[in-house]
Structures are given as C-alpha cells and as structure tokens.
Image 1 (spheres, rainbow, N blue to C red):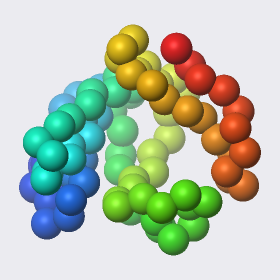
Image 2 (image 1 turned 90 degrees about the vertical axis):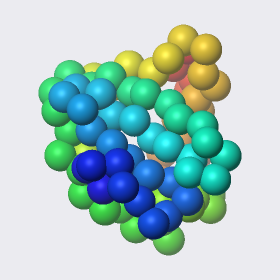
Image 3 (image 1 turned 180 degrees about the vertical axis):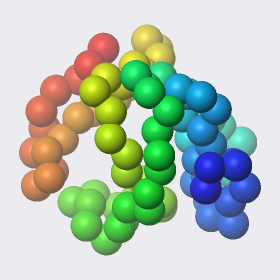
Image 4 (image 1 turned 180 degrees about the horizontal axis):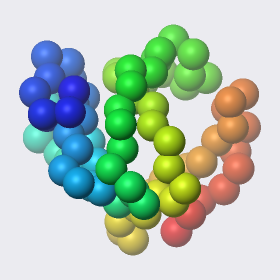
Amino acid sequence: MKDGVSDERIGFEVNGTTLTVRDVIEGEQMEFRVDREPELSPALPALFPSPVDNAVSFEATSLVVPAYTSIVVRDAEGEFIGRPN
C-alpha cells in the first residue's frame, strides 16, 4: 500500500507528507498534502455510504487538496458537509 504497488484498481503511495491516490486503469492520479507523514491503514469500502473501489484511513490535522479538484466532504451517513474549494 505504501510503496504504490497495487493489485487493485485504486492504489495509494506515501512520499513524506504527500499521499498520492492512483487510478491504475484510467492512468490518473491525485496528490494530497498532509500535515505529517500519513500511516495508512486499510479502510473497509463496505462501510462507505457510496460505492468505492478501495480506501485507506489515516489521522491528520490538515489535508490540502489541489485547487482544481472537485471534492465533496460527507459525514459517516453520507450527508453532504461541504466543498473545500
């Protein structure tokens, strides 16, 4: 998970305080900046209110997303909280 090698459609790679999420099939990726190096743990995709291919969890005080992205933040029940950009 941490080295970027993934047999899944969605892979995760940590490089310092940067978390890269890759869509292996589409060849796309997105980088997130975190306040400290994230220690990734597997998350259970079945617990998400919307379908996901793969997921990780980590603790952070802050998370910076690229300005050009369209991110939607939802609570544990899937209710809309806001858009950070």
